[in-house]
Image (cartoon, rainbow, N blue to C red; front, side, top):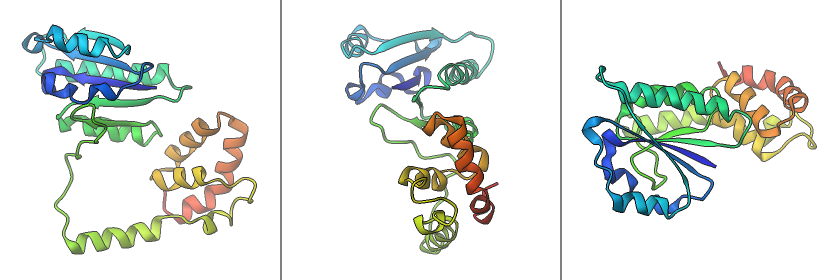
Amino acid sequence: MDYYFVDYENVHSDGFSNVDCLNKDDVICIMYTEQSKNFTLDLFEKVNRLGVSIEVYKAGTGSKNALDFQLSSYLGYIIAKNSKEEVKFHIISKDTGYDVLLRFWQEKGISVDRMEDFSGKKAEPAAQKKRTKTTVKKEKKTKDILSTTKKEMLQCLSEEEYSDRILEIFNSYKTKQAINNALAKEFKDTKKSSAIYKKLKPLIKEKKKS
């Protein structure tokens, strides 16, 4: 199940490109303002035919970033409401201001990203720098040092405990809290995830996970 939060003031109807790829259990939450209320019937019918759930909210007035604040608040509410479910969250917007919010949730092990439409292609972060060949080499060297291999992980876990998914989680998150949260979400068994996390602590320290 995926939850899409559409900043309609920012993307308008262009943001609904490739909306046909959604599944019936997905949810679209459209946030609009007085200045961006021209949601055509053709577009509404197109989305409605997909059989997905649709929520529409008009942002209040009185603040320049009223819609951004409302969308961010509602995102947090929905994340908390679905904390025990396998849900992915997406913000449909070109506004790079959301990227700070994304990092906050990602560090807590929550799957949330920003896209400019429903194509599935993640938008480039605001802080994306121009990468030279030297920069790429340095990044690769750092990644090679910080990345963990199966061999290294098996020094902490037994063959029975190890799985490629645990390795993926370990290498995907930069903080120990995010790793712990992701393990708990993966196994849905507090005792098992806690035992694995405890055994991984020396490796977490070695790889400088904050």
